[in-house]
Amino acid sequence: MARAQGLGKRYIKAFFKGFFVAVPVTVTFLDRVACVARVEGASMQPSLNPGGRQASDVVLLNQWSIRNYDVQRGDIVSLV
Image 1: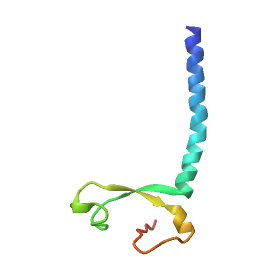
Image 2 (image 1 turned 30 degrees about the horizontal axis):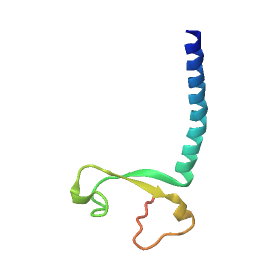
Image 3 (image 1 turned 45 degrees about the vertical axis):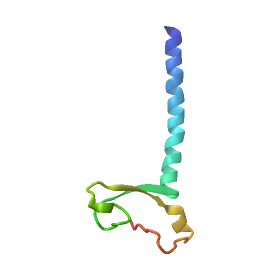
Image 4 (image 1 turned 90 degrees about the horizontal axis):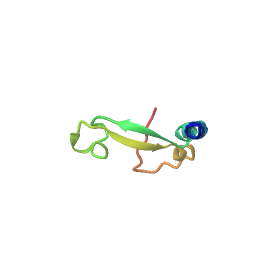
């Protein structure tokens, strides 16, 4: 019984160590490199939301290219 409690404490400790490392890394990545956005409506048809679906598309916005001014013709740009 005592061994199971010690094992549970080790797992909880390892979880929190991983959590406190993963959260700042994820926040920094989403803030500086890329972020996830949802596209709704007909404004981007036919590229996104084809066929007039009511569902929304999820896209990954590359923020790194904008910082390097690496935008080319045909790219979709999002303004926030």
